[in-house]
Length: 97
Image 1: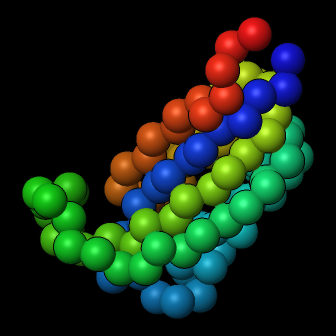
Image 2: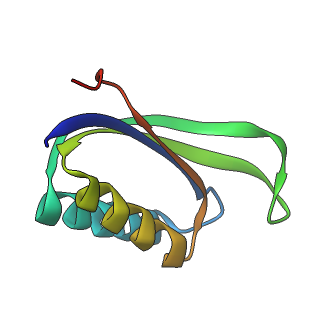
């Protein structure tokens, strides 16, 4: 069943610009392979509420995804193993039918 999800992740702001783009591209490719990336917003660099992996600042990326559960599972697996990703959260935004 195809559902709509929001995926927000935080990238280490101390990464070089090229490395940051490579991380975003890697995650987008994983999403597009298994689902559909509807929208992406770069919310910019922000101060974290508390240190994560000894980092004080991070770049927030928000993705809106349409796909099945396996698309989300694969995206989360990629986020777990990708260096430079500090945290991520996936939320289903449509109602279950």
